[in-house]
Length: 545
Image 1 (cartoon, rainbow, N blue to C red):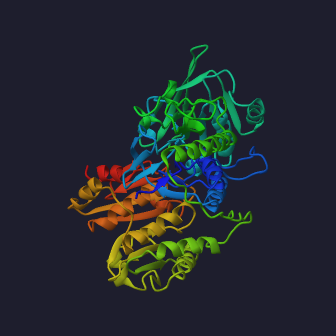
Image 2: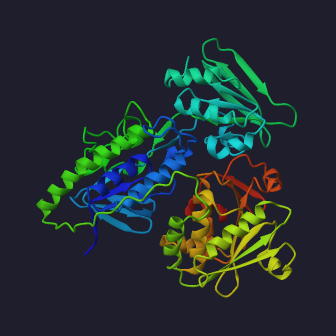
Image 3: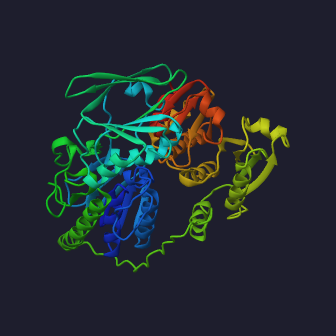
């Protein structure tokens, strides 16, 4: 008999995780489906200072702790992209690219994505001057003039964050004043490195490879002004003009309201019985993490009664869950692999069908070499019979260097059970957001590997030309892992594809060669440059161009 969950949550941001915590605590059988493991838009926030009970914390750390709490209450997680659903029956069905799941209730917590403005030059310079994530891309604009477009909380907050990097920060807002809380706006206005220009719009960016000039229009006087960078220099434009709800996939299944938001009743149920919507996906006056978690709690408590009544009506017996103790949350800074993380990795490595070998090629001149060697050695020590480890200084094993096509050091190469190059290299410390990518890469080489949709697998197998893909990343980038994971999966399924993940702050020559000012940056065959988060299908489209 197919498994029927009490609750399926689509989305792993604050609202979704909160629903999971309350559902798990009520001993409901809960599954969270995440498109990617990143914790929603809050993960892009450098600091959260208005969450009750926590003086200051990064968005990423807050979501890491929240997820641990959900796992402690027995919530299940699966990574996948929802492609279809059936809400017409009492038992709801959710289809992803890889599987199909059933539940008595569904919580939509897909959130919203940053809007683009559409001004001339926006698309052309995205990744080379135009950005949408200060946490991901702020460091690229160190010592430059930076323009922040927007008047809301995100624009105000990110403008202050960007003062860490920019020579100057200028806020461009078409509104006559900030639309966020006055206290936040006043703080921005008082900042010595921030200039504000209200009633003003960016109307054009121009330049060659990077922007060199920007035109602005005062929407009260009609005056046009122009900013020009010094010869040989450039500048940054960060766009924070609100979010578009990620509701497109649900059209035709539930009611979608004005602006793409999903209307609900006070229990947060949509117009379809048993389907709920929480967080930024629904119309609300305040879009903050605290209101998102409140939504999740309200929906889960409503679902508890709804599911109980529905089980009785359908005659479905409930298997009692054992009460789980919450995972203790460590607030101190943890070492590279703490005991909890090691245990999680053991669970993954136990599933390896074959051993793999991880080879580190060191460069004594680069400080990061030692950190990479120690990190990989620590990972390999978890299961030495499955994870073989070796390390060489640059030039010490030239035959192996040639075999794996080493172009820079330090770098990590992954060999399969027969000692053949798998096509995967990592010129970066496998930490931060990329630790998961690295472990998944090993899993894909060892087998069985991550599932791939049949139509995608067919396209992968048809690639009959050598393709080299380099992905420029930073360890603070929340959008990079998805692209790395998609590309490395393709590489492990077709020997014609090779992938190298490169930390652009370690290898500045690589960054400068391709004028990279945003990550992920995808370089195909050392010629063609693409920017932005990519799926397997997106990467296949790029490869087959």
